[in-house]
Length: 223
Image (cartoon, rainbow, N blue to C red; front, side):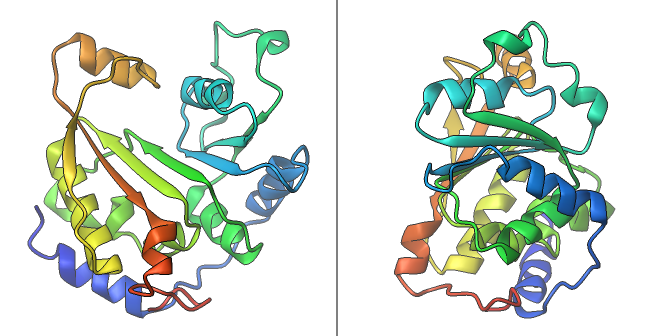
């Protein structure tokens, strides 16, 4: 793990992040909530890629509203082999930058039931630490959204770091675990499994963390 991880996470937890919003991300939030009835529990598939995971989550949780967000319009348009008529009606895809989208969700007072970060870009070089989600200034906003947060990767360092970052923020033990994808959620997960690569995941119930009052964050994102 990166030797400056704890320093980086602690800094972001103690300092507000005030990057200006881009309008298309505001529009994306509006679009993602347009079909929501305001009552169904929310699931966010952050960085959903071609959307296979979003579709499977919507089918697995038919009483939830599932939002798949990705910054690439090209990836979102490649959700084959699913024709529009066969897509679940309790889901939506939107193109947005997660750095803005997560913060806008917090500004709107949204709370998630479940939150998935599946196989994010690991940014493996030493100088890339600040681009990994758990070491990015937006990380405190991810925590504020609550719910059961799950991160999966085929790079053990990423999930180990993710667990450490969550532990630093919550004051609780959070562990990375080996994972066997019996039913892969993403094309990457299927490819990694079929090629014999090891898979890892971190799961944390953020609602339990907040209830324990160990990491109650102020609206500005600080602890």
